[in-house]
Image 1 (tube, one colour):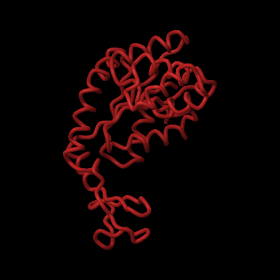
Image 2: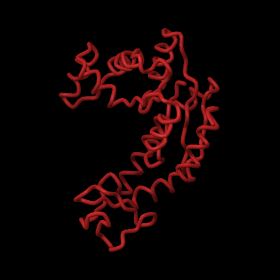
Image 3: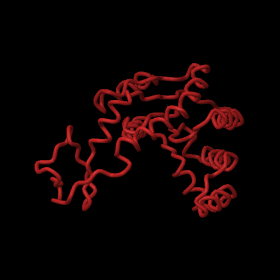
Length: 215
């Protein structure tokens, strides 16, 4: 089964990806993982990607697409995969269709986890991270026994910069602007599965399983 998993920051996409891996026994492929693997293997595209990564520059589409093509040709993808972080644009989606077409394959599902922005902002701005052990509390859903102190190790809790409201709103704005054209593109193909992401992780997992026909 070949799946693209899409979801905004804070929607629980990472957790659902892990659960899908266990259910379907297929690899999760993220953009970062693909680049690191290509660089480590010393592939042609890996060398090209490394040049941009070393300079701290954005990797151009032709290199990104080349790395994806290399990765999807690996034996562990024969039975399917979960793509996370690619494609990000309609042009990349078209390139992915061509890659799969050349492999005489196609996407089965594009799973979109939907959560209202206000709920996401509440989830993310409420997180408090321990400076010492990294454990994450929440001021509403996992309240520490002592204000500002981690239950696990007694370390100081703080709010990360990327958990502040203005940062989150900017991230959500970027997500929506990138995602809308993708969802429209795949909706035309009839493979978009929209999932209500406000419930428990288990509820969301079960909804995804039903949507992709794997109960």
